[in-house]
Length: 273
Image 1 (cartoon, rainbow, N blue to C red):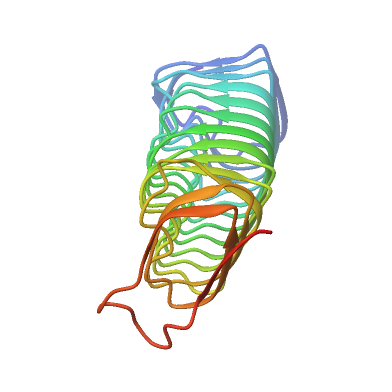
Image 2 (image 1 turned 180 degrees about the vertical axis):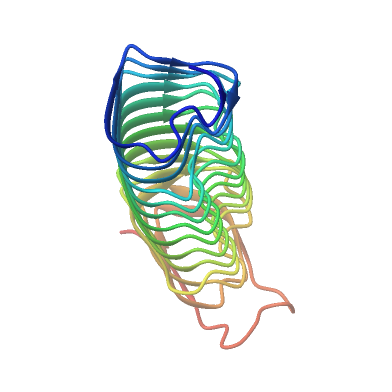
């Protein structure tokens, strides 16, 4: 099927081995849709859809901006080669999904669950989204999770410059985070048993917590102007002007407190015995 809106306003529909060819808005203003082993080539195939399941499908590069303004999605065992997916959506669950071109994906979404998901080329991922739970996750793409709220991540490998900026209530467990300027201007950002690398991490934070984390040697000038409570199981290359709280690690290459230290300026810097 192709052309303009071939399945417009369809309901209680099951698609098996169907290809939506070049065109626009193939499945728009629909509800209770199932797609199994289908191929989507035209742009905007799923807009304003209420309740749908997508399984064993392929979204080609032509199917850009495929899922917008919709709710109650289950997507499994699917490959996505198109950018700008998942906008203004509520209640979506992805399992065993690979997104190969995730530019500007997951914007303004809520109630998101991802498990066994891999993301590539995911610049500006998860902008202004909330209520997110992620498990077994691999991501490459900068500026991710900016302005997000209420996020829980387990067993992830995230390669992202400027990740978690301006976030609120984010907790990351048992993960590897690699990227410059991690978590700036965040509120209630927490890392548990994580390995962190990249220059100048975790600055200008309020309510920052690190529990049994490791900081790579690249992590210099950390914690500037942050309210922090950290236990670190490695040495720290350098810290600069943490505002308040306490930092405990195996040792420090350099500790900087200078005239730019902001009040209250009473952070305790300790060495593990």
